Each structure stands twice: as C-alpha cells, then as structure tokens.
Length: 262
Image 1 (tube, rainbow, N blue to C red):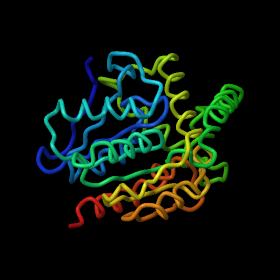
Image 2: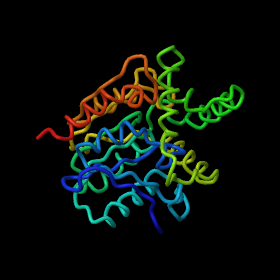
Image 3: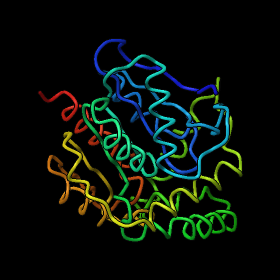
C-alpha cells in the first residue's frame, strides 16, 4: 500500500496532519488554509487508502480509515502529531484520539460531529441532491454543500473553488466512484451508531464550523464542545460547512494560536 502525500512548511516541531473530507483528494484543501498554517508549522496532507493517488481499496468504516491514517503517520516515523480533521476527517481524528491517545498532542475538528450526531446519516441524501443541483445549474456541488446561499456565501464559494484550481502542476488523481461510495457508507454508518462518550478525549480540542452547516448540522459542533473536557468552539456567521474556508484568515490565525499555546 502506498500513500500519496504532501509535506509543507518548516521541517521541525510537531507536524499537523490534515485529514480530509468526503470525496476529497490532496487538491481539495484550500491553499490559503494549508499555506497559512504551513507558514509556521509543518503540515502533512495525504490521501487515505484507495483515494486519489494512494493505492488499495477504500474502507467502509471510519474506524478502518483511522487505522490507515495511523499506519501512514507511523510510517513517516512520527511519535506525536497534531491532527486537523475536516468533516469526515474530523470523525477519523476523533477515533485516532481515542484509539491512539499517545500519538496525538492536539486536535482541530472542523465541520464535523460526534458518532451518532444529529443529521449525519443524511449526508448521502444531501450529497446526491446537491450533485444533481450542481449538474442542473452547471455549478460545483460544493457551492451548495459548503456555502450558504446568501450573497456572502455565494461569493465565498466562488472564491474557494477558484483557489482549488490554482495548482496546475503535479495535481492529484480524482477520487473514483467506488471510493466515494465506500466513504458515503462509512459516514452513514457513523451517523447511525449509538452516541459514544467523547469525554475520554482529554487532548486540547479546537472545534470550528459555520453557523449554518447543512451537511453536518452546526449543533453537532456545539454538542462536541459541551461533551469534551478540554474543548473550545468557534462559530463563523453567515457560513456553512465550509466556514473555515470562507473565514480562512480568521481560522488560520485561531488555529496557529491554539497549536502554539503552551
């Protein structure tokens, strides 16, 4: 099994490993978020098994994806990492923090929710619906899935999608339909499971989301922080699932302050 990854920023200190969202490959990370954090911290982004240029077949559970992420992190020789998990990546990050607590120093969970969280089981339906909306209106489904339909939201979506096209060389492979299907199953399962005790996660955790997240309803972010012993919450106004991309400057600033805090 080979993992495709990118390694940016200073080569010292505890690295921040980015865990990505449904259907995403390396090129789906907002360059302003990655480069913003890599300005002061080592950042590793990677494709999980069977996704993009990584080999193997994509697991159908979040737990198996977490195991693969740990395999990848250990293969790079890291003993401690910070994790930034966005959406599905935030689910994977929660599992890693519980199964490999000594590997993790701090967690940033964005646009995500706890196992059995409200509305998470509807991600499949919403994704299909907005894919159709995208096809009908000749727009990227992320414009609907990640951003609000207000003037600000629409503009932020257009700007974000333009940034994703900035890299012209060494681009990643797109996700396959079978890998996308496996990920949808894994998220659906996560949404249907019984809620678990997240108070076992004692790491410092920064939780961030937009106030109007349709994919993983924003109340899941509030619920997570309420149940985490060491959590703090940032909610962005007039923003959806992609709130950290819409408010990239503020998010990068908050994330760096959180990661560098003693």
